Amino acid sequence: MGEKVEAGSYDLSDRQLYRIKHRQCLDVLGRMLDERRFDRPKNLLGLEIELNLAGPDGTPRMMNTEVLRRIASRDFQTELGMFNLEVNIAPHRLGGRVLDQLAEELRTALAYAHRKANEVDAGIVMIGILPTLNREDLVSANLSEDDRYALLNDQMVAARGEHFALDIEGVERLRCSSASIAPEAACTSVQLHLQVTPGKFADVWNAAQSIAAAQVAVGANAPFLFGRELWRESRPPLFLQSTDTRPPELQAQGVRPRSWFGERWISSAYDLFEENVRYFPALIPLCDREDPQRVLDDGGVPQLAELTLHNGTVYRWNRPVYGIADGVPHLRVENRVLPAGPTVTDVIANVAFYYGVVRALAEETRPVWSRLPFETAARNFDTACRHGIEASLEWPRRGRYGGLTRVTAVDLVREELLPLAGAGLDAWGVEPADRDLYLGVIEERCRRRVNGASWQAATYHRALERGLEREAALAATTRRYCELMHAGEPVHTWPVGLPEPALPVR
Picture 1: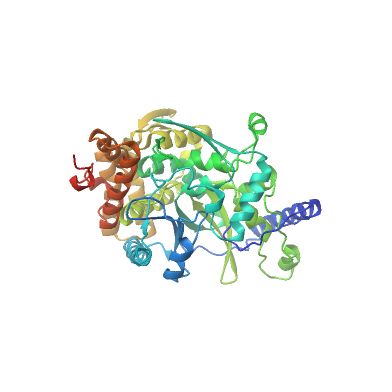
Picture 2: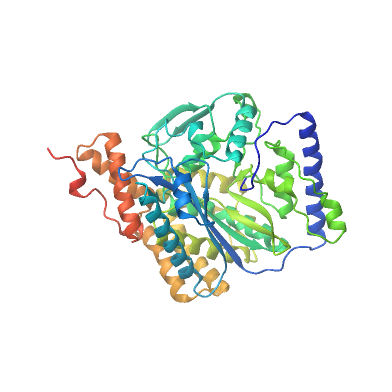
């Protein structure tokens, strides 16, 4: 959905033609895979981060158009809500000092954007869900001024045929409804891209699915929505429900939601694109003039426009991506599991953990997914979203007896996954100093049992204990979060609670 699309209406012939073109794209993709038409491995990673705009009081600012005009950089783009931005870091080759390079580029970009936002009494906040958002903020009038967002909203509302129902029960329960997909804009995440060869795609995707729960457990950063304390990582249930085009009757029939963990391990990238065609009707049946079969027959590289547009409206937590760079097609795994923030150091630590573990698991002779039922991986993901750093997960037992055992997420990460991450980063050729620095951040989060979500919740409750009302406590927690986020020390070092001046004078 990053493509420019124009608002419009679609009739039956449009949808029929789109279905035919989409199937042609899938057939051409299958042929390209069979004929090995894809780029050779380049060990390239990509990084995108969705951001919030908030004022000095911690509340959202609906002014991304003005802030983007001042930033004036193609590295920054709109996102769904007027209080959202997205920053894109150029692809880097994995190896050497890449982690420190990413950190420096990200700090520079965010500091610049923050200065520009300050000119209009706003600032950049890197967080999973802004705690001060309320229901009045997340309405269709606050969608970004771009045809693609209005069109996506109109098509999803029409597909559902009624209001979107939000019902999330965590520490507290939130029940409400929305006439638009605007609540989706509350979810701000980090997207990690890894370019892979077709032959390695399945192993990398399966590995990424296997560790999604561990990623969330150590990286959770979204415990609040609409004034309620919910899951430690509330983005997945919110995203699922705010984009759920199924009315209750289709949900009862087992029709799959568009925000989806999946239901099986795969053997090829083709499996995922084929499932997208088979299970999900088109939301935006916009046809391109390209004949992909003729382009391929003539020795060219097809855009596969219908396939890529549709793929952008199926919200897998690990998504397949077909792309073209310098005239050469490639495949990427897009990891969408992580929330934004809390700091640049924390983000890069999450990056190091992901790329390291995925590399190591994808190269195991007896892969973990051969011993971990897919249903268990999906259940682990749900558990980690609910409980964050305190989650307990099911994982294959080491040794010859096999089977599954229940282990705390922090023990799993410290005892098994961090050593794998270190070995994976070594295999990528990452400098040992960078490896140790950033994996050390994950180690300390586990040792102290602290991440962004646990800090937010603890600071909020400390504010309540000191006499602040709920709304004031959330605002004060957000302001303190912003101060510490921009100071830049990783979240496990943050002092819990508010500085004295933030409390009311009695």
